[in-house]
Image 1 (tube, one colour):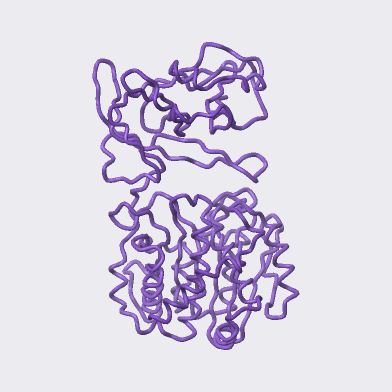
Image 2: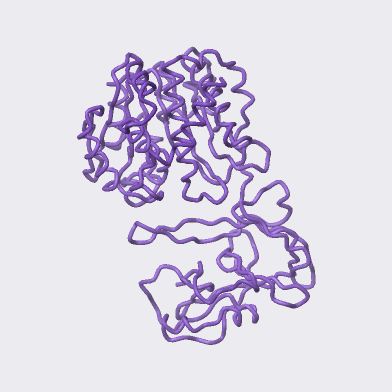
Length: 472
């Protein structure tokens, strides 16, 4: 185990040598990986085969390397907005094709196992960065009926390979903690059951043992941030159905890490984990793990919130309460499908002591004032460049009016919201699922503004830049 730890540490420390620079954020497209796949075809260690076409006609590829008797199949991004492992797979391709000090290790792996990868199972969904495919079908609930061409391709590929191990690679929401704790789940695992009784047979036992080993290795880098995914049987899911065939399936979900919304650190962990999994399978060292240790890995719990404001005074009529406010940010795709903006929502109000925020503000001694819309009206967006947000906030205003009925802009790049002509805003709503727009004052003095859930400190406000909404 000590040697494995050292080996994993070496992969971790040297990761930047293999990181695929073309995939630098989460919103890469099919064309980005297609260019890389075409490059891989020219390297003799890889076999690249077209497995089929998506509904919109994008080729889906199977990339293989090695010639060992043990077969491993990894598939990623069957949900179009879950790209972390896809990027890590191309990092792994770079690792195997590079000239480095791992020559002996790579030769051992490729002589012992055959690796098969299907990155970006759902290229149409990835193009618009949505979970479902272009038919609005969740591919991971299409394993039985297989209405989508992508589902058929994945199923047929699996049946042709008949792998010994399968890695079902996903991203999960940012809302989870590792058990009842204040630590976000960075990586969660799952050995999917193949029936409602959650029977444990030899192949599922092997999945559990491998997960135990990977969790122990991972604990070297992110102690306390490892969890298990929901253990329920889902008869329509691919992992659960593939497990019925006798293949040992490992579900791996990339979650959340502070200051890593693009999940680039988690991508690095995927790189290390998958290579260590290949090593374990080749050496069969997972067999020495204690299966019962799988039970001690905590389950995901929904206890993370993007931003929590604690202990703030809220006035309701003639009553005053002290409460916490939890705010989450939703990523809204722009029409160009390349970028996004944030739309915030009040997730919860009251005692949020069991929750942890990726960011928190102790508002003890501060009073909340609901945001208002300024009485002044502007005639164009260009005029907004001259608005001083501090003056707005001093008057408890978080919104300004623009006297136009429509715009091509999809969000406000200012530290305030923009209300178009004939659109009223009920700014006095401090309630769950409302937009979080308010001013925080201490003894009457403006201290903070919260606009579309983003915090602006009175002492640090700049006239440019923001994350506001256009209300239209």
